[in-house]
Every structure is written in structure tokens, then in C-alpha cells.
Amino acid sequence: MKPTFPILAAVAVAAAGGWYAFSGTNAVDSTQITPLVSAANAQTASADKADTASSETTAETAAIEDMTLGNPDSAVQIIEYASYTCPHCAAFDQGPFQQLKVDYIDNDKIGFTYREVYFDRYGLWASMVSRCGGEDKFFGITDMIYAGQSEWVRAGEPTAIVEELRKIGRLAGLDNEELDACLQDGEKAQSLVAWWEENQKADDITSTPSFMINGKKYSNMPYAEMKEIIDAALEE
Image (cartoon, rainbow, N blue to C red; front, side):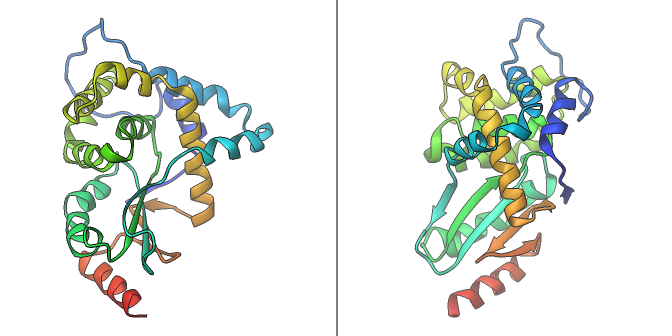
């Protein structure tokens, strides 16, 4: 379970190469282009303007689409807050979430929304890849990112991590041109971070994974406990 912090400052440090380090020995091809660096740099520039751009931020965040599954009209709605670089989030995705889909989401008993949390630039970059194919591909790419988390986060230098994320995107059916366009979109990166910060404040998110079940916040829990909460809510 990872604590959260103001991401704009964190990304600024990350862009300077000093925030988040993963171990790894994968060789990096010096000819590789790292489009994601421009997104991180865009975040650095935006930090200085944050106090004077509240109205613009509201417009930007309104353009960010919530990624949803299940029944939007159900009496039970769950929002998961998770980071692509959080091991506990990967464990939830690969285990309890798959059971949650079978028991409640795929049969439209509940509505489910996934919202990204950005602890570091790599989580932001993973989000930009997962969103690259729109809602149709989002959850499939998310599963692939979590399944391969232990590999891509330890790929080595940022260029190698970028390429590992691009590989996941290509496996999901995206081509290099699509990925380049998504990963070079500095405005989208800025909007995503602002969107996350608004969500964090609104729902008081301090760790991942966190869950909002019908507006009440819960921390990570065993699936059996979550099932009891859902079943009780469905019976109300």
C-alpha cells in the first residue's frame, strides 16, 4: 500500500532524473526515442502556473473520461483508485478483481469505475498507454500492465521502461504511430495529473488501492470482506 503525495512536484523532480529509481540491467538502445520525457517536462512547466490556472484546469479535467464497466444504473457503484506501479494494486487486479468481474460486473449487478493514481512518472506513462486505445482497450491493457508490472518497472533507464510499455501497447493492437501520438501528448499528461489531484481531494485518497463503495471509502481488503460489503449494499 503506497502513500500518496502532490504529483506535480514529484513529476518535476522526476523530470530532472532524481525522483523514482527502479533496479534493472536491461540494455538501452541509444537510438531509441523517449516521447514520454516530453510529457514529464510538460508537467514541470505546468507546476509554476498551477495557482493561476484553476478555470483552465477545470475544463481540462472535465475532458478526462472515467473508465467504467458493469451497470451504471446499479444501486451499487464502486470506484477503485490504483497506481500502475503499486504491487498491491497489481495483486488486486490479477486476483480479486477478476473474481469481482465474474460475480458482479459481467452480469451487471454493480457499476465499476477505475481511476488512476500517479505516484511517479512511470505510473503516468502507463496510464497514457492504457488510455491510448480508448475505453474498449483500456481494461485489457490495464490487465497486461499489471501482469507485467514486475518486469517493466525494473526495465532500467526511462527509455527502456518506455519501450516496455510500448510493447504492451503493441500487444494490445496499437501501432507505433498511435503510441507515439499518445505518449507525446503533454497536454493530456497535464490534464490527467490535474484530474487525479481533483479526485484525490474529493475522495481523500491517501493510499492504493482504495475503494469508494457507494461513496464510502475503504482501504485494501480481502475479497471476502469486499463481497460482504457489496452483498449488504445490494440488499438495501
